[in-house]
Image (cartoon, rainbow, N blue to C red; front, side):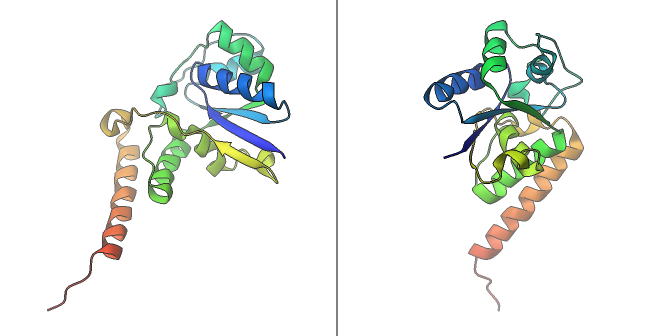
Length: 177
């Protein structure tokens, strides 16, 4: 059985723990990390082969806003993680919206990183014919603080209102006089 595990990355503790546990049981399972394009210290370090910083600006995935990974987690990630992909802020936002609308799951931006990578198609070459697990983590959803960019905030609110209106229309009987 071929399996992928897609994990959001901040400082690397979650993916290091998951990779250590899973690879000790079955080393053929692919562990793929996901970070925001805006803040991806672990990805930059992973591809440079040494610890480095990377932050261009803030991110919706503020729970994973770590510009420089720690040395312990970096060594584990470098050894056990198969790949790290980057997602845009729009892809994170779209993932948060999709999780709300399709799965009734409200998550912070960091929790939506793995599904953002899947929905964007950036992992299509990994998921063909493989079972895939997407980690959705984080419970610090703060709509106002999270969406500093008004355009992004408006898109999320607007799409959520459309969804909730559809939900109400479907569940509330229309009374005609």
